[in-house]
Length: 326
Image 1 (tube, rainbow, N blue to C red):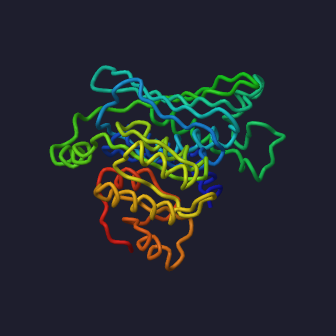
Image 2 (cartoon, rainbow, N blue to C red):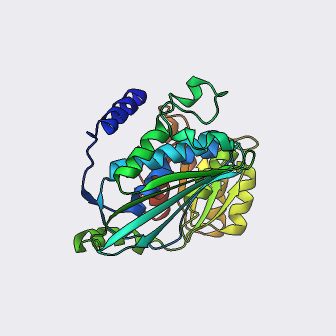
Image 3 (spheres, rainbow, N blue to C red):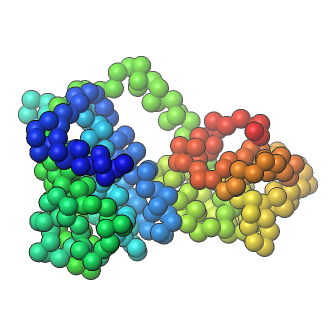
């Protein structure tokens, strides 16, 4: 389906029939959303995926957020796909022009295999792929970059690449659009609500999967929270006694000591020293009937099925959970 849509988009673009929406949106939010799409994939490959903002981007611009996001998804997706070690680094900046216009500049840098100099211009052509040795199945039909270039041009911008074989690639694209001012009062109030709750919290993650630990660490990288990790329940109980966290995320299935046993030991310790129970969130990759009930019996506060999104994780940390196990 994605290939068919790519072909239709390119056909419309070539015929001058690809219309763009012109609506208000927050560019920073679109960039974060695009990065979030690939957080799990990056963690599974044990590579970094980092999003930073060099400048304060405008809160509201007029343009096509879906097409802006499409470019980001194409470029970040390719970078993650071709990077097996190191990471993918997304940097966003802007230049304020005259007449309330702003130029957004997004840089996607990876530590992948790189692109030979003779191929760097051709990769923006239709049906071109990074490397002809890569299979058609793994790369698709090679329209993503050419569509991205067309979309950048339609949004008064451009796209380019610099690359050294063996040292990664850097794609830079720009788009230009009018800035429309600050977020309306009603929206500002909503946006400020979660910020008021972001008090620094001490988090203990007890999880045997290294990729999952990396993912959760990435989730809080731009927050004030502090997190320590343990690779099994036995290690987690010892860290709990010294660290005294505000909340614990407890994987259920672990070697050495599983989550049920670790939770019971933590609850026993709290009773012995007269400490109030802290929230323990059970984590499981299997939504099996009865798992939540077993978690409750062991002393867990609530239960989450993996994969857990960044939004779900932060909501739990910041207190937006109920204590009922569903």
